[in-house]
Length: 220
Length: 204
Image (cartoon, rainbow over all chains, first blue to last red; front, side, top):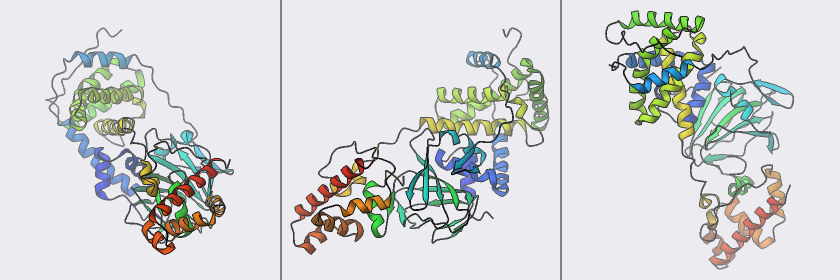
């Protein structure tokens, strides 16, 4: 069951188009699997859309619009055949991902092993953010860390805990330098998450501290 | 060619929103079913200027605003068959398309953030290494491997790295503890990290 949702403010800002594209991606993905939040966004959408309708538009005489109209209507129709939704594959297992993430499936690189039972695949979002699918096998654990910047995590499939709370598929988690946590999964099926950070992690305990000088290389 | 298709805007100030929504829904369905350019021109005439006003306010730039209008209205033309009047009004559908395109544009526009400053990554080396090109070691390194490599360091370097990175001591505290000059702590740290980095690079 989904317990961790975006705030109402984040949902509104998402609808308005006023949040970072990284947060927008995870909020949109969350809404794809959360009817409750999607309904809230729909309400804001129709409110904002009626604002647009109320704009007193000038009578169109702008030649730029004439040109635009002409060029658009020359374009072919896009038939969108029903395609099989792209899945994330790891070791013969296939995971469905929320629709907003589907177009990034083919921009996802190879899996690499980070630690004992934690795997990571980089995702090229086309900007400078550092995005990954991360899979924790049962018993897999990311060393305790805090964040130099902000970390957005969407649980795609499975369950994990991090010492602060327990999370389930669809949960959206926002962490920053006020949070120290150590994500691990005890679920038999493991846990697949999608994660975006804007700065490398900062490991906070034990030998994992040794990773800090190199953390930009793996836990990005 | 497009002879005979004119931009029509007669709905602008006369129709009530609800009537307008029905009118626009009907037009979109004609576009979907028959590729009707006349119907599309009416939809375009109604929404394009409004989208431009909205986009100008949001993006503050005429060229970007027009790009948003063009991309949005292109989607409306090419994907009119995806409009579903039961799910919402035409304006909500078109607004949502515009908003999503805006996020795509933001993503593309976002200046590539400066390469992460090496000072952040190599805090103890900030005085000594102005080299900004600390990148692209092998991505496949694991914690265990770093631990093994760490064990290959000379004892003196290992002691310094352990105190700083594992125990979290400052360089000065390490100097006091080991009764060696601060400069020696710094140079041992630098040499050790350089050595680890070299070992990581050779580690394929």
